[in-house]
Amino acid sequence: MKLTLTEYSLLRLLLFLTPVPGLSPQGKKIIKNASKFYREILVSQILKTTNNSIDKAMERMGTVMKFIYVIEEAKCYTDQNFSVMTLFNIADVKGELPYEVHIRKGLKN
Image (tube, rainbow, N blue to C red; front, top):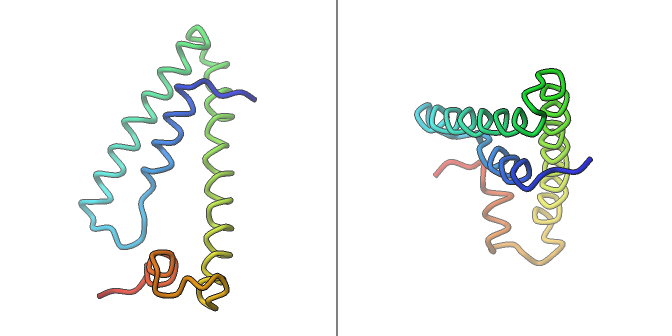
């Protein structure tokens, strides 16, 4: 399946607009509203490219949104592996930014 540049760009935005643990309720609301805004733009773009055919648009939207799931799964897998590498200092990164991001990200100050 090929994504249009618009679909690709909007999917990237939607991936960045995923709430993370530790966000305040107001932060979660902002992320949720922004995600909804860009999802609606994606739907309208898909409707345009499918000549307003609801059936074709629904099928395309489902296919396009599958990419988010695949990318999120890959991200979790990569993050877990990198966390193990960092935890045991396999890549000699302890005390560096990757350590701060992957190991200390869940700790509260």
